[in-house]
Length: 111
Image 1 (tube, one colour):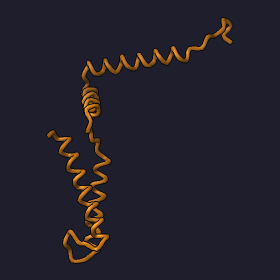
Image 2 (image 1 turned 180 degrees about the vertical axis):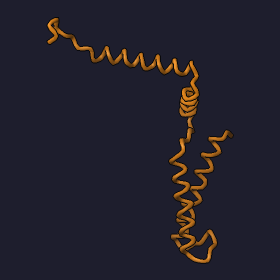
Image 3 (image 1 turned 30 degrees about the vertical axis):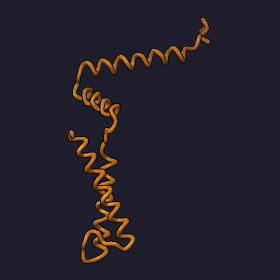
């Protein structure tokens, strides 16, 4: 497993553990042993919010298309000339096709 996949798995595991602990605590089971219920709720909330925040903050690329897109983005960020040329050509093609679509005939008088 690569570094990004490990981060993804850890974030999801943290979220699942926190959510499971919160659910069980709400139903009267104390999974994480502490002296008071308030401390258990606080720890459970911290784990759940921390896992949820980390999971949504990070860009987890699970599919091949997402991984390819991230590799392309990284290449652009690092100044890879081939990637930059590909972006430039794509933008130029989009602009040309847009110009063809919105081209409006103009009279010789400009009206």
